[in-house]
Image 1 (cartoon, rainbow, N blue to C red):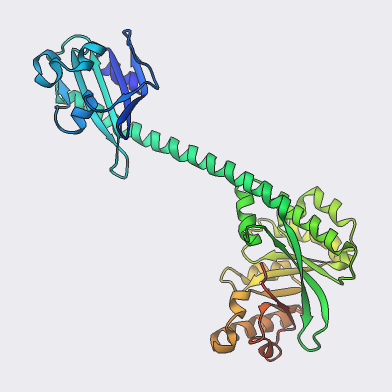
Image 2: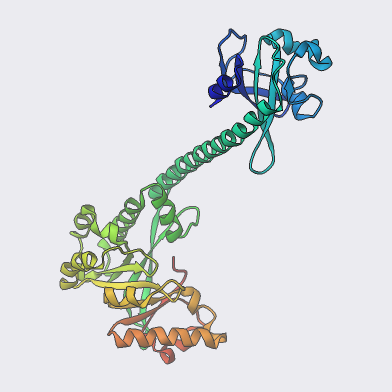
Length: 364
């Protein structure tokens, strides 16, 4: 585009200068004459044509530098051999000055007019948009690289905490909730979202599953529930992992906001496991994203109530109504109802609201 500007104006040189602090550097440069500078060349900003134009000292169009008092004896006039010059500021979408788009010739151009400056101005706007897009892409790539490194660390330091799942009526422990804990305290759902940004969501899920299975391998934990996505369930590595555990000891949790593109496929994948005793749960019901369609198409064995809905229900009748409605739905579809993150204050309400099981402690 810079070369197009040069040819359109019929001048020898065109360039983009980027201003950073008290220096300017050449971001792009095209020329049909020999120059003592090249792309990447940096020099003090003060005293340059660009500085004089952006400060308003010099007009945007100089048809003959020998006739302009500010340029006739300027260093760059002789250093670069400038006979005629035209330049315009380049500003970011925020209004911040980025640099300049300029062109010049070795000989004077008496016919150089403000119309040429308008050509540069229109082109500068478009080039500035491209530069900002490039910066956004570069920044995004850097962020993703940092995120990938973070995921590497998370895969190494993840630990599994097993939280008891208790019957409301008897207090008997009937299973355990597997919760992934990371060294930086990041919740699993948030960490999973980061892993998915770099295409490693399934890797993280299966890593957590593998650690969970090892954690219960030598224990008498009756049932362990693990968070899983339809994509992870589809991965051949999943089948290899669960071969070491009887499916009857496994409960697979699917978030209410998990996107499931093909319920029939998911049902087909789950069917053999369910026949062998595995159970299916819909997780985080009541967090605002749940849809009845999602619940009914999965035909879950368990509905798990989001802890944010449970916490504070002792003092909030609206929360109690919502919890009771979820418990009623669970009973109607012949599913257990588990409340997550139950504290001492909420525990007495569970039986009255129809909740069959509770998980104490901080759930992910």
